[in-house]
Length: 153
Image 1: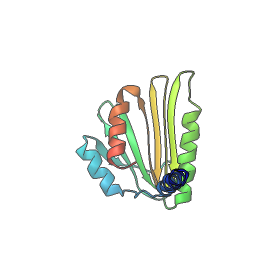
Image 2: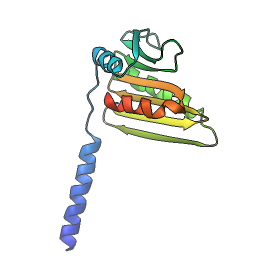
Image 3: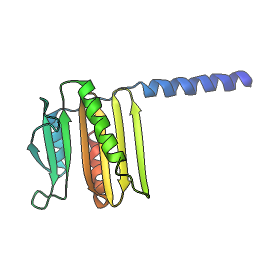
Image 4: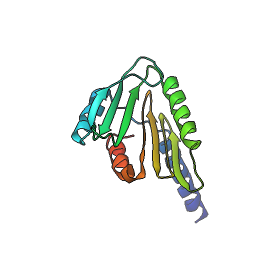
């Protein structure tokens, strides 16, 4: 009985460790554009937020009134993406109010953080050398989350 419990424990821990080391596959700019347009966003090309080379696209909901926009960025290196991800996460964390909720995940080549506070929803997610981020009213939280999940971020 003890051996069976020990064996089960080893299997569970091994599975958890293998799952945590798994990598996600980043998408490219064309895939982001296609999926965003299919979801009803208007997509435009823009300049990377830190001025580095690479692709940067904005998926805008209701371009006339700009309800919110999701920014998709590809930078040359994973280190640059990690750095920008951390800057965004720190920026969002500094906005925490007295009543807020957040979630954070990091494993392999993937990092994710979201925050809901003071009627605003903040999200940044990185896979390899790509990342997405958004700041919006909480009324769009579910819509944004669904789209982010649909692209694997």
